[in-house]
Image (cartoon, rainbow, N blue to C red; front, side, top):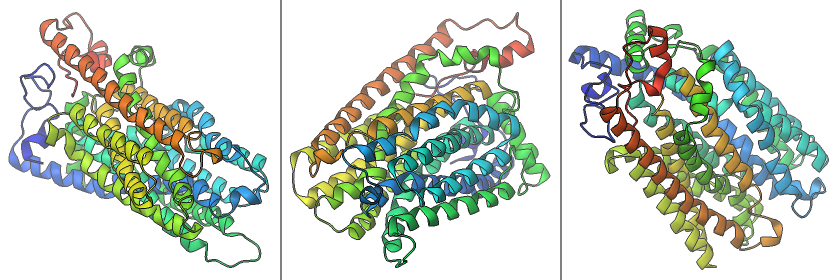
Amino acid sequence: MDDKQIASSHPKVDSPDGVSDKPYAQIVDSDTAKRLRWAFRKVDATLILVLLLANVLNSMDRSNLGLSKVAGLEKDTGMHGSDFNVVVSLMYPTYLLFMLPSNLVLRKVGARIWLSLITIIWGVINMCMAFAKSKTDLILCRLFLGMAESGATPGGLMLITLWYPRELVTSRISFFFSSFAIGAIVGGPIASGIMNIDSPRFKSWQWIFFIEGILTAGFGCIMYFLLADYPEKSWLLNASEKTLLKQRMEQDQMDGGHRPIDKSRLLVHVRDPLIYAQALIFYCVNFGSNTILTFSAIIVNQMGYSPSASQAMQAIPGLCGFIGILLSRYYPKWFGSHYAGALFVSGWIITASIILLATTSNGARIFALCLLAFGSFGAGGIGPGWVMSNVGGPTRSAVSGALNVTFGGLGALSASYIYQNHDAPRYLFGHVINLFAGLLAAITATVAYLIIRRRNKQKVTEPLDISHMTDREILSLENHHPDFRYVA
């Protein structure tokens, strides 16, 4: 990233679907730009790394049900038919219900306290799942797990928008969401290794829940000492770096995100169709990513591989997903827009689903799972990044983050039922659903792109008159400010 790009969140592009030719920030001198770059690198090494590791554990805790099923969970707890799918899905009602309230609590008490606390809680709940004796026990644990995890992902997204200017948001969010793929990479082999534990007290699936729960709760305690709510509270940045980042965020969001959420403007953003069009992309791609996280070991096991091998082989599509999501940060630059990048990743999801439907070859199907992971996790980076790049203030940030992850949760909830026991071993129904999800993602990305084009053109041809407004009213405009430009 060059000095001028760091200096301005609105590069000068004279295009109705680009950004304004009157950016908020002014191009600063080379020395200041270098100091900014170094300050953001320090933030990367603390904030982003902590959020990444927390989300890796989040991913492992979500996927351990599928890994535990091939280790005997379903039989030992007396589940049959679609019981497993019900247990998987019942995390998401409470996850969705408590998501927005959790985001508002985070703004009230701060990320350092809230994110640390909920990480500890969901780690303890995972430990409790090791003692489940029936489907009912697992359902209760999953309901409480949804409550605890509801604030993790939207809270992380909000925190990123409070620390980074908009042109840096997509790359950081891509890295943040790569944690789910990392969870698939390490979770499977860890579960495979745990299978070798010989204990008269615990069965192998119980050890999976217990050990991963301890790791999560322990990391939650560490998070309290590493996180900071705002740049000026950072323990790593020096005084000049804190001032520099504060000024940079003030240029980008007019108030650096410190202004509290404007409740009177919440409905304005909640009713915005653009947020829903972009969030629907995340809904669609969560079918593919949850196929990898929850069902890939089960699908591979039905190909004839042993439980231990099936768990370990989850790392292969997980690695492809990790590569896909890391590359997604460059798609807006390579393809010229987030929209083109969204079409690119949707194409991989569609291709993978067609292969899974067309062949019975184990090698081809495992390769298709890799393509599905590459596209789905890549879309999981570019989709939320596109949403959060179009944030003009804290109210928009809270609504965008919560609704985006809400739609992702709805996608995960829906995906819980697409791979059922009666469809084994080919699971054609699940593959068809993934195919339609890829097609719908491409369609909704096109709708979002057209809305952005129209709005940016209107800001040029019909700019809002703010001459009669007070400073407070101007600040509350956020995305509706006449100088704000949406990012395509």
